Image 1 (spheres, helix red, strand yellow):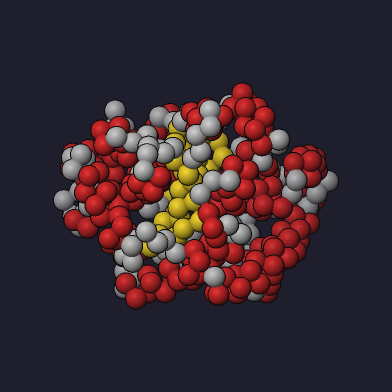
Image 2: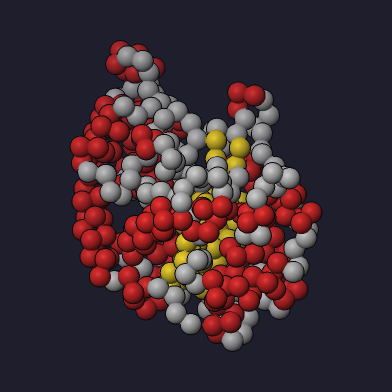
Length: 383
């Protein structure tokens, strides 16, 4: 069954939000999103099963940043029975990489390390040219080259990781894309993605290209091979139509584990490469990071006195989210939340913690990013 893809409303105008593969706006209600997309919550039992295999629960799971899945339990079952799986994730290179992009990649690296899993990393430069960004292919190609450095800097194993750039590797993608495209009708694509009469035909024909890495491992291994996709929830529509055709062409349905969106430094929505002030980029210098964090929205009160009296709200605070997901350990995060709510912690203190942690992280990351320039050929996909 193919679920229709439409914007998801939380129930009233003030709380409306939209989630599409190309944009996320508003304050997302993740329970509503699970119901609309037809996915499953990651349960305590599933985490317990994973922990029995890895020896721990990753903080991004403990903090519920990865919160939803399709067939993640099935992937673990297959692995326990001796069947290895591939990982597949990607990036649309429309701009610079920010911290919100890094978190699913970091979790993907964790899975690669724990399960010794090969990874296919797809850069959809074609989609970003086609989808209304008003950028030339030369501009997209420049961002692609820069984004590859960020991917390598995460620390993926070069012998286990292959990067696919759609326009450079299309000869490897196109035969399988044809098999997929032949089995997806326009009415299905229109229902899932909301295509209209004004949608360019390049976008209408693109979804099968993004589906191909779900099945490339089966071609590489010469047998049906399980694939797990760690990615943000906005990309789920692509995998829905892929799952619909998988068994028709003799392969497993791809499994997914979905992340939330790291919030914008402004009041709502996710970080965006197209809005530089809302995000911390991997190439930002220390002064830029400090400037952005200093003016970030918080869940605090208008004055110090009111903050001391009433406390703050970490649930709506992007500064708290950054610290929780990227820098604090679970114990530190719980203590930070308690102090915030009780009025014993001021927003300026959290901003200072975020600035110092971000600068330290980026200093190290940028060194690895520089070294990545000599490693690109090791990571590029070859038949």
